[in-house]
Figure: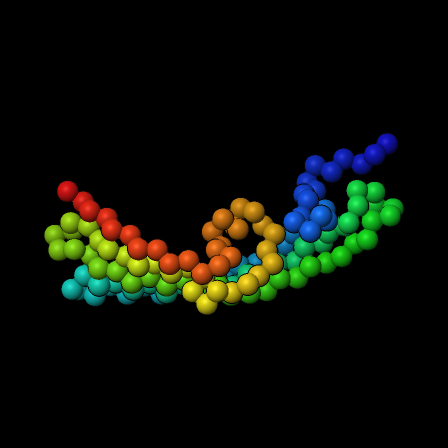
Length: 125
């Protein structure tokens, strides 16, 4: 009787993930000046270990372990308009353009794989 693979996922390299262990450390520093300027610096350290096989059949599959360890740095600077009329923010994600191999799809949406800079204007009336 074949074994069920309910929790096995296919990786981008064609392997099947058996176990994913991810550790995260996310320090963040924020500063707000009385004149409306604010700054945010954030880092995220990821340590990930993925055990994967290259075939469905466990008898012929080769088990390999992929380790990924990296830092991602984000930064933002902005100005809050007087009387809370809104704000203007320049936000940078992965500002050092760190390249990484990362498998966790839920977190991957938050971890930008390339440098990204956005400007945002919010008006409140």
